[in-house]
Amino acid sequence: MRFLKQDGIQVKDINQYYLDKYNISLRINNDIYEPAEDTFLMIDNVIIPRNVKIILEIGCGSGIISLALSKKFPNKRFILSDISFISTQYTNYNIKLNRLQSNIDVICSDSIDALINFSPDLILWNPPYLPEEEHSFFTQTEKMMLFGGKKGYEAVYKLINKLNKRKMNTTFYTIFSSLAWDPEEEIRNENLSIQFEIIKEQKLPFEKLYLVKILIGD
Image (cartoon, rainbow, N blue to C red; front, side):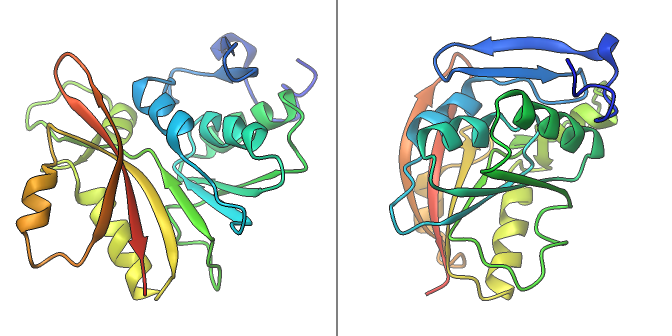
């Protein structure tokens, strides 16, 4: 716990985890997304090619995805971003806890807004992907973690538009839910120039999750 004070983390707020499968120790509080099926879907199925050197994770939360992938692909450089300063504090703490400081850097940023003249080889984002409910009793923090817009996928499409405007050439891995996104409809929709591949599907009791690989640029 020697990093707690310097990282500004309150001991009373901490939930502790040890993820044996990934050999990762994790500390989070109630304002940070808890690792769930979508988290592990991404960790277990993202493949980072040899020629990829720099990976950007957006909305890193606790940092668990990049922490696990950094152990799996130790020669890669990870840049993590999150709009929540609290999340970046906990991510920094978790990086130190797992002795991965040499592989990972963290910034507080909304999406890619603070990253100028930067083009990562690969982008990861486990986004908020549920359709927003009109009469929701969730807190504002919970809404940011769960809802991707009225239809559910707007947050991801907004990022894709940003990447295209910057004329980036990169590969983007993200998660969609069947509650908000239909791959067959995307194929039929000629207005969207998105080249995507479903890498893995996972059926849950009330939805199906899709891990999707999207090619950005030429």
